[in-house]
Length: 244
Image (cartoon, rainbow, N blue to C red; front, side):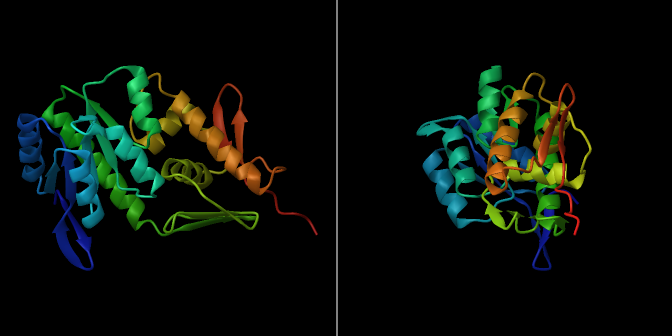
């Protein structure tokens, strides 16, 4: 059934926060979300949105960029810095490559340019909620020699040191670690981790990979866990077990 999930044994509607100050558009979006049996809260400012985020459990945030009290990207960045991993999609008329990259770099999971079709909005909302549910229910722990990745607690330990990763850095590491020694192109990583195909935005993968590598190197400079395969992409190369 669309729009429902189990929490503590009870089936309840998945909860979406819409942050949009254009009233006619907001009414149209809310109408379509409720038609899919989602529960919807509506805010028209960043301040209102933050109040709802602090007091309610959310499964997805749909946020306009240009709001009366600031840019939605500011709130997106703050949420990621605070460790909040709720899926977030930006809705905006800003369609330049630089704007889309800025949104993805800020931690947005998707970026939908206005004007958009209601069918596309519905499809992307469903996709983000499916991904969020799957990540939430995932409980496996991946262990290599000296490296442990817990996808339930989203904690990483490398060479007896705990890593502090952003949500996107963790998702990248987890995906690569699930396929050790398999080489992925930047576009494949963009589709697998960000969830959509963004032509021309592969360099956002580069910046995240570089930050991830820098953090891993602090744990053990002699181990290169995320390797570049020149002309192809990247792979996770687990540390070898030392012979005794």
